[in-house]
Image (cartoon, rainbow, N blue to C red; front, top):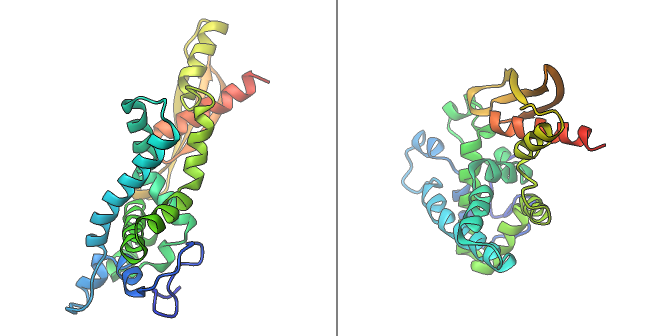
Length: 235
């Protein structure tokens, strides 16, 4: 997919049409691309990434404080950290297909830069800033909340079930109550490149496998495994 131009002023899944397409072009241009071309009129996205980080923080903080007035500062901070984490932003960027539109240098292309979590997260922050500069705060708010709609739905679901996201704790309590034993988590497989590792974990009780899960960190895979084990136990 070619970079943005005046005739192509928004990635298709992004629900915003740019007035100044140069801002989108800048947001999707990685430093490696500019460094290889040494042209004074080319801009990479680090400036917009810096601004986007602040805009994103304001939008998410405002949304959470308004949506969950009953939560403490600490609880709100935990929710915010989850939403603006590199993993969450990269997942949102993948849904928007930003990787296909990034302008990268040859080195980044060869190292599969379009799939890198860090580059995708940075690109989304830069796009949020570009929308902010092009259309103002409300336009940027709409784009941000739409991009993170899946993550926001997950948080909404968890608020109706306190502690629902901590499946390891819930499963440990279940095991202690039922068997007077603690579950054991075993990493059985690691696949993928270093920047995109995938871990497969099994959870065992008394030597028997009762659940398995995958994730981009051992902690995430363990949570999924515990969730699967709970689902089986509660049937």
